[in-house]
Length: 484
Image (cartoon, rainbow, N blue to C red; front, top):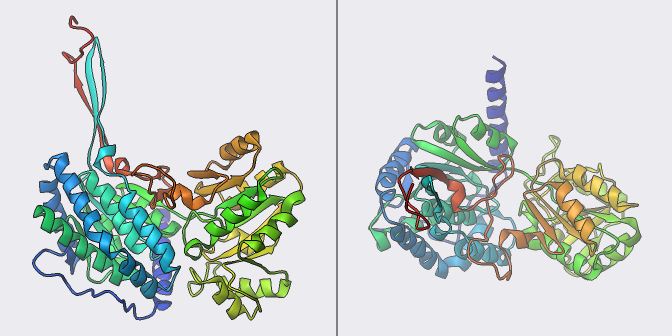
């Protein structure tokens, strides 16, 4: 009975979240024409059962195709979306009202060109006197996904490339606040794949997303695995589904700055990364914890890099009441909005075009302990590095998501990386670098848009969405010896 009550309370929480998100959206009009392309199965269905049935039929054929066929599928997606990146970015911005077009262009390129493909799924072989053991990465089947409104098209593209590389097909539960651009991307993905390979419905979705459809999908017998991005309630719903689940949950990444840091670089990297897409990346710096001896100089350099220093406590309090709802959650009306928009709404005067708002507060301040997804950057100072590190661990909240440090002291970097225990840890750089964003010189495969912290997989790749299977041959095979 207790478990049933827990599940009912989770469902109530999910419904409340979605209701709030829907009520904060406009009519969802988009600059992209979302009419159905002609001449192919576009992957959009009216019911969950129809969509998953189509994906299941496609998967039974797709799973038998050679690796070269999968590579052809992935190439068609990259070639197809390449010319449309700018218009997709503009459509995301128009429909969701969050972030910046420039940042979305960068994120879309990252998702499209830096996501791991079939090449990452190389077999592993061991041989010896006892014969041969081989491990290969094979499909799960139909994977069910739920995505955020903060990165709608990016998530579809990134997850589709990873999952299709693994030989799976994919049902994507669109966020209601980004349903138009999500539908456009899925329709056109199917068009590109069909024209290149003749296959239909490798990625499917619904014409009208809803909380009921998400719950039905999670319980559908033909869905073999779940990949869910969202708040604790949605992730927990996936974890109690009885299926293999990849959960991408919340984070609250602190940026640590010690007394040895290159403060020019630290200020530039922190503000640039905090302001990127108006802080809607879950990996973005959400608060700074700094040694007191360098705090004033760091703040000064942050201002030089485009941050607005807010010192009026009444104005800080007003921003708290304005941006955090009574239930403790960020108000979606301000999520992903420009720093100037938030300052204007708070009645704060400023000059120029600040990209982030910084202010000094204590470690228990609500803007420190809440993942805001806004270009608001609280600064907490501590007398010693050990106190800085303890505070950073505390304010990260045990999410095991992302953290960073700015330091020239290698033992400090090592200790912080160990103690923070996060899926992503960055030293002396912007945290968005760890998602594959930027000119990092990394090979293809560095994109990390789905970061599975609650379930422990960390930054996902095509490998994450495969089964690792073992094949034994006791009578062979080894070139090093013959007699057994």
